[in-house]
Length: 253
Image (cartoon, rainbow, N blue to C red; front, side, top):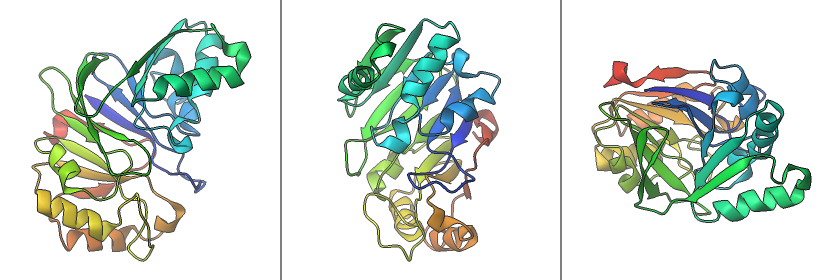
């Protein structure tokens, strides 16, 4: 399975990173989150927005969903007829609320809305998906993706450093984890390198590579320092994700 980081930024734009979105390519393409700028990044891939008929949301903060109505309109204009939107409880209300605001989009697409609970296992686009709640300011789900016969990938979504979430990635080829701020920023709902390093060390998961993402402007020019701080506690393979980075999980497994 290939994983492309469409957007590795967060709620405050950097000018170099768009907001959160990932393209997974197991049996059929799957878009995970759809923040501002993600649709443009998706249009630059071979899949394009015409090729994505399923979106999986981790939670409903704007930097993870703001391009969702844009995606719906683009698919309609491109002649596509359907879209599946899955996510945590409240996803139906989110989509229906967007359609209430943008009334001309009512009934333009055949929408299949699915809500996923903590601990639930589902299948989307030919890959098995396990959901686990994170430590965040609103209900947020991390997901573990395991295509048949393939390596697993875990997206930790938005979360404070949590050994349980790190353990959720045990045996995965890669973990993409929030590392929003450097250590000198006092923050809740997101980890710093030191807090994440400690959580990874406590859980000690067998993970091929940890990719740091959801990066605020505060991290610009601080990557080496952040890696050093994290590495003080955790000695696994860790690197920063970047917009457009594509990872072949088979090469990491």
